[in-house]
Image (tube, rainbow, N blue to C red):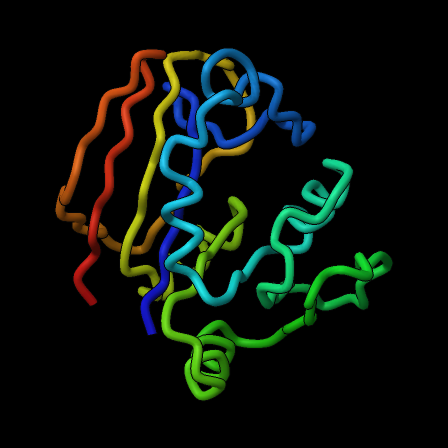
Length: 175
């Protein structure tokens, strides 16, 4: 099973403001162009997100993932589940969760949410990362990357520049 990350990041490395706001991400041409997201999501057969990210997505006013299975990592029951979604709560050790998804036949899983991406990276369970770096400094917020016990080497696979000044880089991580 392959795991992939696709995210927008401010130039100073944040995926959201400290209060989870994404106004800086949704302004300008970034909201008019999907910047490869539709092409990316077409290659995915399941999504793993953290509880905080799940709650933020629910606040957008609509369920974006259709009938694609979404696994929410949480130790608590989910308060809200959209009727149109295929959503399951998972908890436990990441290796077990990864193995369970693989045993269930998923081939390519999208990992989303700051803490979730950080945990999967630290566990060595991310294969590809696509980062869209926007030309904006927001000063503080939720970082994409956190502490690691050791260096994580990435291989640059692709770079694309957009008219907005956004630069998108795709990396592979050898496991």
